[in-house]
Length: 291
Image (cartoon, rainbow, N blue to C red):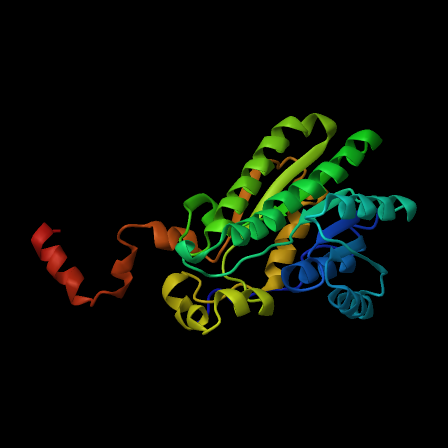
């Protein structure tokens, strides 16, 4: 029996983001696209940016067919501060300055650390950390100047806190983004700006899994590592994101929320592997402990 069947329909009314503008980096595919669609369904003006124009155009067409709301697109390399400034000018010129910003763009691949070049490290750090910082600084400054408050949501990862081999550039960069989330939640709260992060576990997207699970091993073994016995779905992340950035949650700031099907706690418990023992094991334990 599947106790953890996903419910992907939005729990919100379809107008709660009517007066909001949402900027999503990496919004042309995967988790970014799923969030963009959800915000658009809820009435928000959505801006998606990425380096790939074709992905942006396809996402725009797909989302607009579903929601009948305009989706704005802008090509942008978030590692390039001049590109980010151009994105900000685009938003200002079109009167769509975002009050919600989602730092979703990411880069990652599996590789033994000793085989990585410094350039490989820098590429991931540039996208994940410097890109998030560029977006946060430019759009945060605008929020502060306009005195309208705002909301930042960073998409990180569970291993940002635990560390993980074979994805070290991503791990250290996401850890820094978590720190940025907590630090600016404290410092910029006086401007009415909230900062939170969501750390997803294994949620299937074609782009991420082609790099991190090229042989399909993760999907085959997921029932062994997740108490919920299934992968997450992009729509589940989108539902959580639209709650965290909503006014229903406006007392929450400075938090990193794990959305991982219980993966982190399952892998952290010293004796959790006892799920796999034969039932006779417990009979023997009971006799020895005289319970």
